[in-house]
Length: 98
Image (cartoon, rainbow, N blue to C red):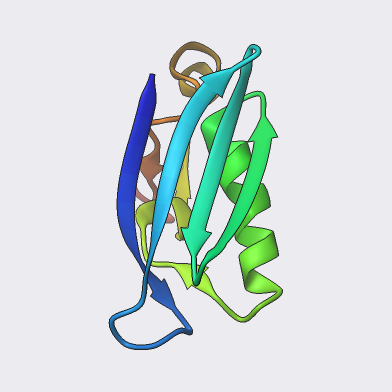
């Protein structure tokens, strides 16, 4: 299963975007972020963890992805990570049920 998303970059030009590709190979989840003629590829046991690793590399350049996967209050459940490879997550708020 290969998924591709077009995501706006925060910290870049106003209309700058990145292409985020999710792919499953060799029993690992790969996330590739393509931007400015560059690519960042990270792999992990689930897509959310791979996205977090890619985000850390982007943040070192002063960039961030404008998507829920980059939000501080978005987390996948343990079961969602195990059974759904971390593709779905919950938007959480303190004091409210998820």
